[in-house]
Image 1 (cartoon, protein in one colour):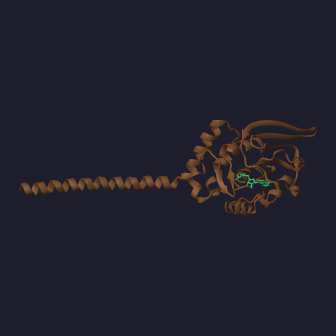
Image 2 (cartoon, rainbow, N blue to C red):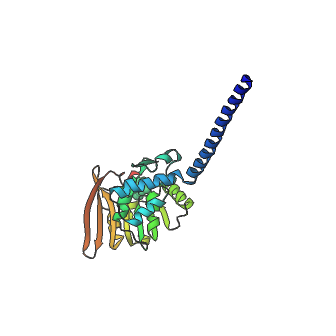
Image 3 (tube, rainbow, N blue to C red):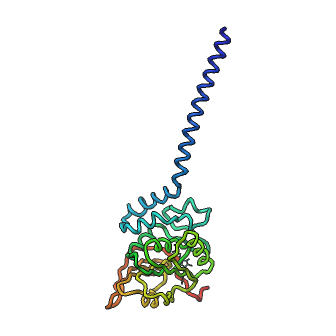
Length: 248
Ligand code: SAH
């Protein structure tokens, strides 16, 4: 009898453990479903916008909305996806980099982009900045001097259905005269001085945002007026140098 009772108790203990196990598995299952529904990159992107942009003073609602939407992880190599929303630039091949999120936001905000604007970007790189501009402007023209990067960026932008962005391989020093004048010009490689054709291709009241300098660079925000260019020096930065054709 005592043996029977012992067996019965052991069986009960086993069954209660089994029940707990079962219910914790189904809880786990529900939790997993919840996290699967919330894309991990959506969450990382929200954190990026909050801590790296909003908390550091980016105020333009349209910049914040665009950067909350554009999937930055789609623009980097798959091995770097988990780092796509980190607070730093990342390599994109050919010795070039995608800029740190804050710098993209800072330059875009300084460009004062409106929904009706036509924008020129110099230095397409992986196409991320172009996509942010594409969310905010009517038309975006982007130039890249390294043909392989231009092809890859075009492919990514097409895959993500950006129909208002055109990418061409060419030397940004010359600008893209056919579609000028531009309401804003954003330059994401650093020349030692401001290229004249870009000034010519800027519309009156248009803004040019451009890093200038050799090693120690600063972002200049230029406004074209009827009486000439107004220029404001802003933050120190480190961009890749703007190349000339002769270096190709
Ligand atoms: N805006 C890019 C990052 C730019 S990195 C992004 O969102 O990914 C700078 C890019 O400028 C590089 O890809 C580099 O090849 C390009 N570049 C350098 N000199 C250039 C020139 N003269 N004309 C056009 N692109 C140039």
